[in-house]
Amino acid sequence: MSIMDSMRIALHGLRANIGRSLLTIIGIVIGIVAIVFVMSMGQAAQEFIISQVEGFGAHTLIVRPGREPQGPTGVAETVLADSLRERDLTYLRQSGHVPGVISVEPAVLVPGSVSYQNQISRPTVFGWTAEALAKFFDVYPETGELFSEEDIEAHAKVAVIGKKVKDELFGDSDAVGEYMKIAGQNMRVVGVLPSKGQVSVLNLDEVVVIPYTTARQDILGSDHYFEFFVGVDEAYDIADVEADLKAALRDLHGITDPEKDDFFVVTQQDIVESVNTITSALTIFLVAIASISLLVGGVGIMNIMLVSVTERTQEIGLRKAVGATNSDILRQFLLEALILTTGGGIVGVLVAALLSWVTAFVVSTFFGLAWNFVVPPLAIFLGVGMASLVGVIFGLYPARRAAKKNPIEALRYE
Image (cartoon, rainbow, N blue to C red; front, side, top):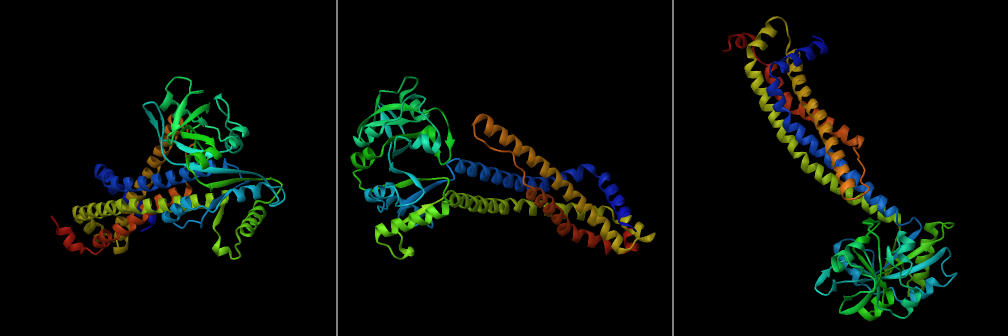
């Protein structure tokens, strides 16, 4: 018997119990939807984060104190490290010490909340330079202005705040000229940023930026920096500038063994690779969990196929009596299972694609994020392929059981 004849008989058998066939594939559909949707969301999240990182500028290096973190404890050690000091800032800013460096913007992270009268907000408070926001994020105050270099030199108690911070503290009123408290000190609002949401590594609606001198010395009472943002001339190779920057800091810190560096440099490529690693690992983990539902669906397929074999015992006996071989019967029932699961896989992929599109539409429309609709080809192949594999694995036992039936006993079956 040809494969086409077996296919025709298998389809006829499934159509005879169309309702049961549709209910049987629900488990497969749910499993494939979970797998494809998770992979689509993982890919979309990866693209979104990378696009935000790339918006920070390819020719920017970030220098941070301490050893490069290898885990959560390493990150905590970096926050507490104090190896970047004023002499490092002065040295790197002097022309000629590191060829290709055109700017060095120090940053200080100020923990805690911000308050105005009885209102409290918990933004990210940065001690930074006057032009850092404009230079790295291309954003300028919607009302008011940036603080000046003179404000930095004078340790002025001034701040530029994000739109959400302004709304939480000052409501509909104009915040410019008002005073708020940071770590118990009165800070005058000189500018309010427009609503920008997430831009690169920061949510600009939830930031407060003050002069780094004020943050470092007057608020924290510290003599070190949280990080340096180093702008690189586009005419220079970023890798060469990174190597020269590391060499300069090692010389300044008296370090001869690179393994003993008390600082580390982060490039855009480093961030992209970290994002890829994290999102890929998370996607694999979630896909593995979602695949469990395919096992449940496979067991359901096996049970229904066994019921079908029992109900069609006389049919099997009749087919054998007129010349059908064991391989013909095996192929027929295996094809039935394969058609069910592959069909379920295709339906699952289509449903997952629809859910991905709806998610992308909702996120981009209502949350204002540049979230793309993505269905990776690998997700489609994996979804249909795993569904078909489930059909073969869980359909093989019922098919073999049907093929081994004795034709005489099968004809006598009631």
